[in-house]
Amino acid sequence: MPYRLDAIDHRILKELQEDGRMTNVELARRVGISPPPCLRRVRALEEAGFITGYRALLDEKRLGYEVTAFAMVHLSSQAEADLAAFEAYVRSKPLVRECWMLSGEIDFLLKCVAPNLSTFQALVAELTGAPNVRNVKTTLTLRNSKNDPIVPLELDRLAV
Amino acid sequence: MPYRLDAIDHRILKELQEDGRMTNVELARRVGISPPPCLRRVRALEEAGFITGYRALLDEKRLGYEVTAFAMVHLSSQAEADLAAFEAYVRSKPLVRECWMLSGEIDFLLKCVAPNLSTFQALVAELTGAPNVRNVKTTLTLRNSKNDPIVPLELDRLAV
DNA sequence: CGACGTCGCGCAATAATATTTCCGATGGCA
DNA sequence: TGCCATCGGAAATATTATTGCGCGACGTCG
Image (cartoon, rainbow over all chains, first blue to last red; front, side, top):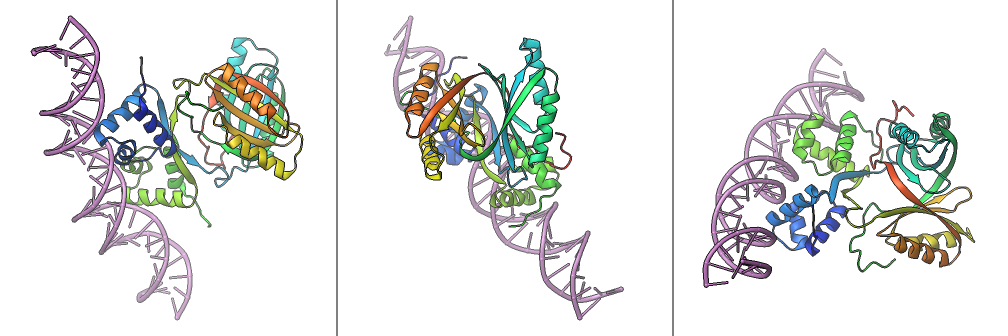
């Protein structure tokens, strides 16, 4: 599905990243076209897979999650079946919010949340005891310096 | 601002996390009340800070970001002013999407995106040369096993 | 026990938006 | 030049958002 985004598409993506609940009328006003073509573009961007969904962002601390921590996991076996098994395991753990398979020493990096330290410890204990897990190193986060779920657009004039 | 969320509030948060662009009519239907009180609850949740915003999620690869990588940064000085300076630096870098201050050996963990490896290398070079940075270790992500921006609700019956 | 105040729901009315339909302008191309 | 594909916008209609208001549940207190 070849697709070429023009300047208006980019502005639509930018605006919807910043406020995903914006009305189509307002969005159209901001990107400089009338509502009908604007809506058509949004639908097209959704169908073409550029927009994968819409989320309300919640304040985790306000909801009782005081702890955010990372866990670095080494497995005993990196056979594909074992990797997949670990991934499936991790997906079943609600407190693990992200899991990345890494190149290099560490096999997986997990971002976890927990209401308190002891819950986090319980999670780590479980992880450590899971099949094929060799060891788990953890680090607590002290503070979040930047957390911007927005994808930068305009790859061209990109200052590193 | 004391606030007690009831079951309906929880369901609202859950639904809006899954589809932040859902109409209020549909949301009301799902949580089992009529639209006016539903809208009032959403507004209240926003004003009380439980909902901090709405985002469209974009497909990063589709937009040209092939690389996601982590960078682990050690600083020479951990004096508060130096930490803050590094945080400010990092916030000015569009390719750094997240930055966490950690306890333990590593001072900061950065999640970065880049259109390709050489751009990522340029970013790392810049980071390495930044003031107060002692060293930077990087890991590429091979794949993303889980990435769920949704905050789990219902702390009580929480299976770790 | 009953009056009263509070709270939160839902109905009904109105204002705004979303969505569809259709038409016209534009530009590529034979 | 004439045809076709593309895309925007006006207008009409269907849905939603939003406001105003009354009602009933519930708890407090005289």
